[in-house]
Amino acid sequence: MERIIATNLLDYFSRHKLISKEQHGFLTKRSTTTNLLESLNDWSLSIENGKRQTVAYIDFAKAFDSACHSKLIQKVENVWNKWLLAAMDWQFFN
Image (cartoon, rainbow, N blue to C red; front, side):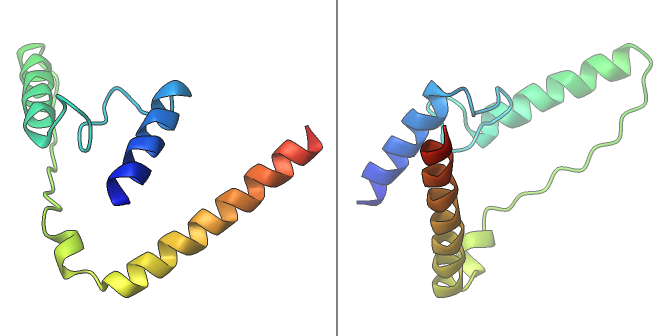
């Protein structure tokens, strides 16, 4: 079920161009490794061009492992319900 929802959401986001080219996680051929490589390239170019560079790179790999899953699911459901209601209102008035 989770895979079906994720696939449909990614398809929707892709069709409506809602995914930034900077997005790397959860996409085919775009991982945290490719993100780090692109970032390193950008940082190197800035330094070579004499620009200052400040970097903060945070790894949230364990963030969902330590989260309270029941609270997380409840929050996602609340956001999803609000999104659905907004979408239905938009369709009704347009």
